[in-house]
Length: 205
Ligand code: GLN
Image (cartoon, rainbow, N blue to C red; front, top):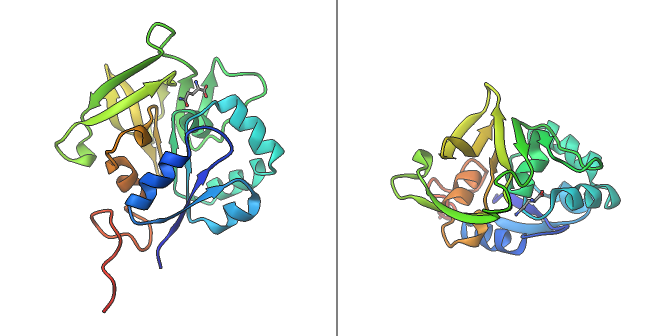
């Protein structure tokens, strides 16, 4: 059976994540309610504004349910604001925002400063093969501390920008804004029903 991968669709850049996930061969759905969350095997938390996402998780009755799924080890991929939501500590956060502490990193909101609000970089990501990954950073969080259990998959100027801890993958940029789906493929590659190349399994004849 092919895995169902949800994308948290409360706010922010969720539509393109759904398109990228479908290109990976998974069944991708929007998640706005606890009932939808209960249907998914894995989740993408997209970019947007982490303070707003925090509030909407509360008002949509998802805060605790999502916390429980994360504690059970649900594979989750957080990008930009999604990385902030999954981190252990938020620096320069709003007083009313929270994070789920699934990746032992401290992130500074808007940590790259106003002068470089947005920038692009070509990343070397060994896990994705020899071709560089073009990464679009938009008011991105800056990783300022990395715990011993965190695997750093890519860095820019020695600052980690892709990290993984167990089933949780986080990136400080927006992988859904380019046509390169390799990071989404890496995320879904361990899920049921996904072939080794990240595409759908060969049909059983
Ligand atoms: N600066 C945003 C925040 O604090 C994140 C920006 C983004 O997701 N592109 O949540």
